[in-house]
Each structure stands twice: as structure tokens, then as C-alpha cells.
Length: 214
Length: 214
DNA sequence: TAGATTGTTAATCGATTAACAATC
DNA sequence: TAGATTGTTAATCGATTAACAATC
Image (cartoon, rainbow over all chains, first blue to last red; front, side, top):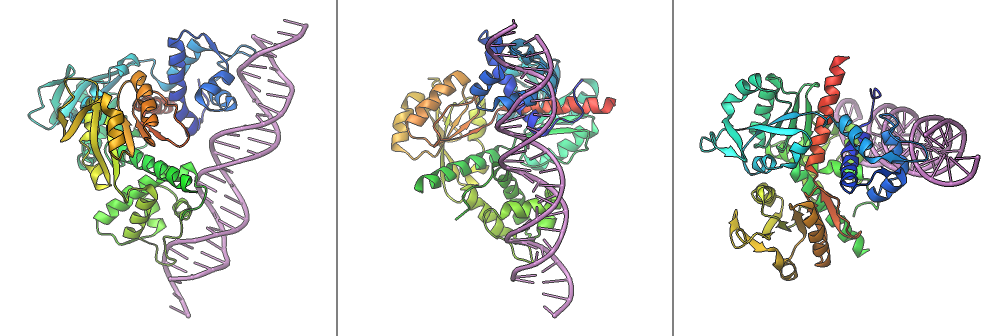
């Protein structure tokens, strides 16, 4: 039972903690102190303890944290202790890249259908996942569990499909289209704006060049 | 000539401003006030003005901002007013998806080579871009301008390739591997951790479900 | 028990918002 | 000129860091 309000900044750090704990777990490390973890991750030990305590005391004074326990607890907080059903909208390069991401499954993410409007693709399979007609979207959602819909189609169509997804009752959208989606409050959207990410990198590169000149 | 220190938070918002200004430009809008933009973008007008003034006064009292001018100025700040040479490491699904991103070119990003270790891929082309042997990486970099290297290979190899890139003099890495890269201070890294993004979405979905129960 | 390290409070730092004088 | 809207300062808010008592 977590606290009422946890800040966005804290949440955004949880997946990274999870990644490092998974690594430690794979390396057979049993316990870790906030100090050790802080050195690995290049964040302050204080922040780690503060972050984790938003969700309860996972550690033990004088000992530190049990890696497996902390890993599992963060997994629970992130909701990856259960099966999450995904569908992909768009069987293009990016959609295919995501379909092939076998690691997801390990964390409970199962991609169960891909939708496209291209007749040449409909009826084929991408990494064993059937490509369906986008017209069947609503029927499919009515008949199958869908937790997350991933959008990898151009922005104009993305906006229309997002509306259809919302109407069909989907509550989470992973959006790769280069646009913001307007959805009701009870629908979660996570944007992956690759072109913005690249521009950000361009800025950093330029800033470092200018630094050097001085 | 911008100010010495601009906060990370401000920088991370610039690409989104750029996207909205591009949209306005395409729609033939000539001027915009911080108030109007704030309503479109769902941020405060105060924040917009504060953000922009880190880089100089682009507006005009009583009038607002000229869309084209502001668009171009932000483009300059982001370093997309010039040609940026990219190479891709990894010709897998994700690498191909990025290679096919024609929109980049419009913003000065040119993908000029792809590297892979798979003999079946070496010598072929992906969207007109030649796939080269990863062994030729250093030779290629010595002979061609490379501003940004994109990494879309598994993490173990990614760490090794990143070291090679740094040694070869590359100053910016767009990293899609599921790991953090250790690089010198003068090398810029932008991470796109898709699995972390998906976990974040999983959290939001779960949080909304719990909200509803109450 | 003594030592180590957490959980948590208090202090600092930074970022956002509000307000308004400057000015086009 | 009068109205509008910026640029900028001050006030608020939130997040990070430091410190240390609690406790394993």
C-alpha cells in the first residue's frame, strides 16, 4: 500500500534502479548498501534512500538492502509482476523492431497482435505475431485483453487511431508518433519522441564544442 | 551568444517548442503570444517566457513572437541549422527503422553509413545506405566526418563499440542499448532506454487502476 | 555490544509560477 | 497614445542533499 502522492521525478528513476538491481541479481550479489549503489549509478546515496522510502522501508539498518527483495519490490511498484497484454499499431520497421524485443516477455509484456492497413502485410506474421487488418481493431479489443497499445504510425493517423483506442477502452498508449495525443485523464500515455531525443543530443554536442572553444 | 549556464530542464523542453513552432509555421501562422502557445502546449506562459529568455529576447512587447524567427532561433540553439553526419552501429530491426527515418534529413541529420558484423548484411544497402563491416569502423571514421554514432546492438557489444567510438574521436553517441555507457566528459551521450519507458508506462497504468478503486 | 547503515527530519538548492514595470 | 505582451524580478513551490537519531 504505497503513499498517496509520489513525485514524477521519483517514478522516472525506478526503472533505472530496477535495471541495476537486475544486473546485480544476475551477478549473484545478495546485499547492497545505498552507498555502494550510489557509486555504481552515479547518484547520491541520500537520493536512493529517499526515493525508496516513498514506498516503504525495504532496507535494514546496519545491513543495507537485499538485492532480490528490492528488485522484486520495485518490480511490483512498476506493475511488472503480472502479465501485460500489448498490441502494436503499425507493422513498419519500428513496429517490427518492437515486436522482436524478446526481452519484454521476461518482464511480463506479451505482444499478441499487430495491426496495419497495408493489404500486403495483413495475414502475414512478424516474429510469430499475426498482422491483422486495422479495421478489426475494435472487434479484437472487445474480444481480447489489451492493456497497452503501441502506436508506430505517422502522426496524422496516430491521432485518429488513438481516439479509436480510447473509445474501445484501452487505458494505456505507448506513442512513437511525432505528436502529442489528446486523451482523457484516465488513459496513460508514454511518449517516445525520437526526433526530440536526437535534437537534444545535437544540443549537447554543440554545447560541448562551444565549451572547448573557451 | 547564450548565457553560461542553462538548466537541463529548460533544454529538454526546447525540442518540444520546436515541434509546435514547426507545426504553426506549416499552418501559416505568423505570430504567437506566450499565452496562446501555453494553451496549445499545456504549459504556463510564464515558463515559456522564462525558458526563451535564457537565450535572449526573441519576442516583442505588445506583439508576441514571430513564429518563423522563433523557430529558426531555437533550431540554432539545438544545432540543427547545419548538417550533422550520423552513422549507425547495428543493421537490425531498430537500426533499419532509424535508417528509414526520412524526416531527419529535413533537420540536417544525414545517415551516411551503417555498420554490422553479420557477413550476410555487409555489402548490402538499407534504404540506399551501405552496410559496412564493423571492422572498418575506425578506418571509416578517420576518413569521413562523423558527428553522431547511433548504437542499436546488444549491451555487451555496445559497451565495447562505445569505447572504440570514443577512441576514434566520436563526440556524440545516441545509445539504444540497455545499459549506461561510461564515456569521457567531452563525449555527449543520449540514452533511449525503451524498456525503461515501457516500465514507466506500466507504472502509470497501474497507478490509474488503483486510483479508480478508491 | 559495537559498528554499520537505514529511515527521516531539516537545510539547501533549483525550478516554476506570479506579478508587474518596461516597452513595442 | 492606449493596449497588449514581453522581459525580469520576487515569491512560491518542489526536489535534492546533508545530517543524525533510530535500530538492526
